Image (tube, rainbow, N blue to C red; front, side):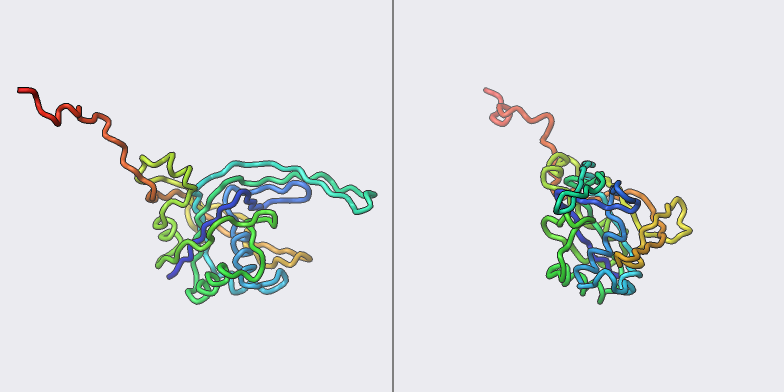
Length: 238
């Protein structure tokens, strides 16, 4: 069993699974449909193409840096100014960082990893206005998605890690694909069947929300709270 680990980081991300009409919400973690869409785009799969090769992938997300929810207003008008479009409200996550694990066939994941390094089409984190920043491919792990998310060190930004430098480990939230009968699981409509803009289709999946404790790569032991008096090292006067 193999898991490809990705790092999703950018000034803005947006992962909507319930957006409708003029209100475009964002989830607080990457959606399965968004992850599959990014992988398919990197491999050159067009919107109207079959997604069968990606349907058996399992996806898990670790929230390494929550980010901040931002709201934006957008409008548009025709070139001649005669027609004004309705005002739309759009939500984004600013400065968030996610560790995403994708589990599946090793051969397919090898192809996906190569494609992410030389994508066939532009990549974005949820919306076209949200290109990824920095490296995407983090690691390849022997194991399932939970093993991968519990193994890879904390991927938060250096500034955030420095604030927690005294902590050897940190506990963060995870969202995992799971069987439908998993106790405590939730159901979300987030499985892409077709990205064809003429007839987008999504199905349901079960997810399990939990936490994992992971190593902090920037851990620094705190200084001794009671340092020795330097004069003690010189000895007592005779």
